[in-house]
Length: 104
Image (cartoon, rainbow, N blue to C red; front, top):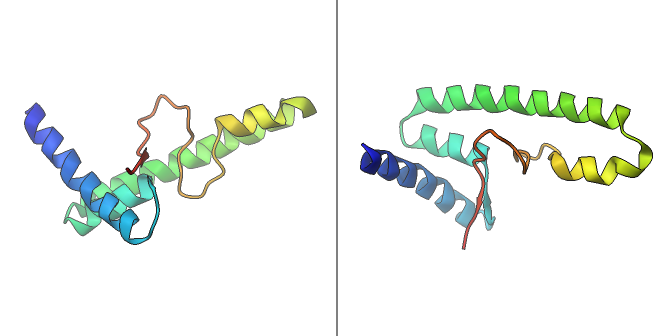
C-alpha cells in the first residue's frame, strides 16, 4: 500500500512540478497540486482539495486579522512571518500538510 501511495504522490507532484518548471517558478503550491490532479483525471479530488484550501486560507486570513488587531505595533513583522499573504501559498508554519516544496 505504501508503495502505491508513494507512486501516486510522485505522479501528481511530478505533473505539478513540470507545470512550475515551464512557468519558470521554483515553488509548487496547493493550487499547482489541484491543477495536476484535475489534469490527470482526478477531478473529484481536485475539487475537494480546492474547497479545503479555500476554507483554510479564509480561516488563516481571519486569524491573522484578529492577531494583528491585538498585536502591539512592534510585533507586526513577527506576525507577518507566521502567516502568508495569499498568493496561492499556504502559511509556512502549520499543522496542516503544506503542499509546497522547492524544486531543485
